[in-house]
Amino acid sequence: MMQPLGPRKVLGKPVPRPARTAGVQTYVPEIARGVGIVVKHFLRNTKEWSLGQSPEPVLESINEGINTISYPEQRRPYPERFRGVHRLTQREDGSPRCVACMCCSTACPAQCIHIDAGEYPAGDPRHGHEKYPVRFVIDELRCIFCGYCVEACPCDAIRMDTGLHASPYDSREQFLFEKQTLLGFPGRDGAQDSSNQKADPGDPTHPGIDRAHHGHDD
Ligand code: SF4
Ligand code: SF4
Image (cartoon, rainbow, N blue to C red):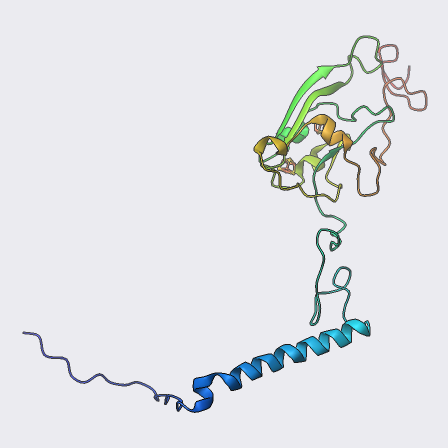
């Protein structure tokens, strides 16, 4: 048979309730204290702002005081190695440096690069030696921005140095960046080519190979 419960044991030291004085009941002292804190911060921030003593939140650290950044007009600078939206680098004639070798799409762990490879037309010195991407699509929504595609590319044809992050589009299709879009993005320095030189087949300044010259000794 269950025993009846005895009186509850009180553990620790009980804290007495504050007395219900007129100040506690009317909230006036606490309201005055809160207003005092607001006014103190207002005066201090205004003084630092007018004397130029507050840190610049865009270029300096976030600190005490006014730290308002008017995004997107003002932005904190991204680190130099920030991986942004992809771009495809161009050759001097504006064609993609990409040779559709599929190294990037093979390396991509998110499988978000799709390439259709094609042959340059007959008569082009690159015909028979290099391919080009007839279609090159990156699904920026699936991308995990790991940078493996950039590392895998043997031609410096794909980069993530645009300094951009994908805009918040309202449909999935808008995140599928096609070749022309990717070719249109400049790097952060404004360049659309690559600083790494690339000699095309038949380039007289470089002993490359083409249909007539099949090796460096020809
Ligand atoms: S950054 Fe990574 S996930 Fe994105 S396309 Fe390149 S390899 Fe794929
Ligand atoms: S971007 Fe580079 S790795 Fe990818 S297919 Fe083109 S050449 Fe190959």
